[in-house]
Length: 267
Image 1 (spheres, helix red, strand yellow):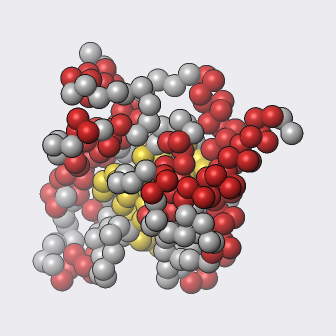
Image 2: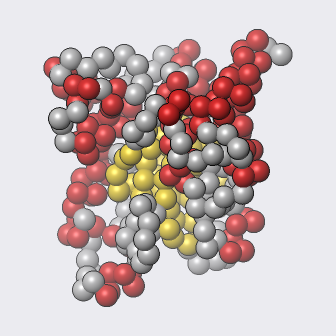
């Protein structure tokens, strides 16, 4: 039995309807280990077969949705909003029938002629995640906030406004892709340590949900997941971020739906 069939069978044994996106919130899973449910759902999203019609629609419509949301986020001007941005696009994509999940972890940016820049998962400071992005097949990375992270400095002007990529390549992560070496030092972690030794749960996760790298205009962007996340509210109830004066559902109703209707009508 394939891994996809195994996952599907496990969900269906709990009487979960797996035919539509968003079943990670099913009542039948409320007593299950949340981390396990989320990771199983994410792997299910990555492995399930998608029809040609689905892929064609995704390639037409998802980039349009991203552009609309990015325009509003730029007008809003907020920095460091990767989690809130990912929550909004996750629920909008679900509403339109697109399978997706939120990846969270570290981001490494490599610009030719410059030292690499990291947003580590394990670092100094008070934050929920180093970075967050959305995976929505066929797109391995959807990142609306890569150019609006805090502390980018002069690097900001070199980065793409958004990333919508289905050309990502799987890469091997080291411990230092997820952890600031200075943070490791003060916590007594030797420089010779490996990811498998210090964070074995993340090494295991990468076998299911791999780290990937994309190249945009000569800039390498590497994404190293330490977990997956999902909104705990439906689109109508999202109040995590009022983007340029609109909550998630209003963005969808006022801007996304009319644009999709126009696209689908061929105008």
